Length: 405
Image (cartoon, rainbow, N blue to C red; front, top):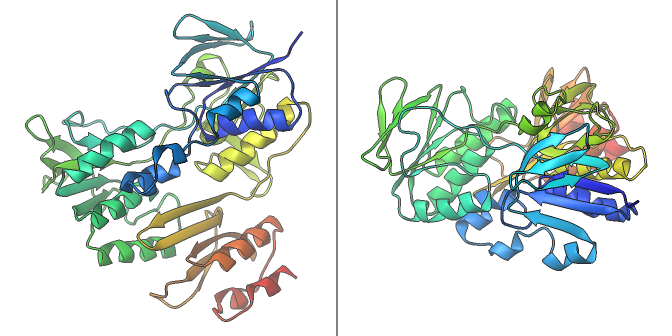
């Protein structure tokens, strides 16, 4: 009988897994189920080039429609999975249809966290995750004069940059004491705070939004202090939460994501999980983690596909991320949490800078601002668990490639 693999989630991880299964030589049936009506697409441009109108919609597609037909991948769009029946090895769709599987991959991603407060349902209060969100946000910004961004993480700051370039007055409200606190070290926070202030963004730290006010449409964001900030558009960007509902209902272990092993497999030998929704053990860092990034989704999906196809592959890629804001490109390799030493490279205010994060002398992460060599070398050093000289790391004139030898 033909073996059947079902993939729940047609985002970056799900689409990559489907393609990788064919590359691995899997000849059985592959069904890729996506809740959105759109074919699998890339999300990072949604808060940058696509939002600005500088990238056409069809440039977002990960692969042309002909690819799925050629590779005999059954692409089921606009379909939602209602339940996973692990005993019968079937997934039930909300239409009542059921699909049988021999192996299952859950790649449901991480939707944005919602702000629960009075006025949160007013027109003009937006979130950003998918194409439809970006399509709705573009005219909202075009017709607005004052934008409040709730949350100073990557998405919030990227949209703030787009809005400032379009001439809007922008205020970013962040509960933490600095920007990007959850995802970056203090040097990076300082770099981007200075960048946004130089472009006229008002940054409010240690503040939370208690309510939105307006007569049918948002007119002000009210802080917990009682202060009201006038606005006619709001983007809420307070992070994301892994979509684990199907896994939890099916009895799979969930702990800040679907718990998997180093091969992306859950405790059920027929079920894997990959991407933003998966909590996995990192051999490189010796602890469990969940990552929200395109590179992680791609590489973990490749490992999951290889293992579903019969190989045994351990997922141990170096995490990396990027963000584009104004004319600045930040590239990050590794995870800086737990560093006991931070070494900065480049003078304050220099266009190219880097921050190196070390723990007990070992390089665990690098943040590179407009500094491709620092990112490229740093990524290799992290993979090698290297202990580079802090003096060399700090020297802007040093040949970083010398550290590789």
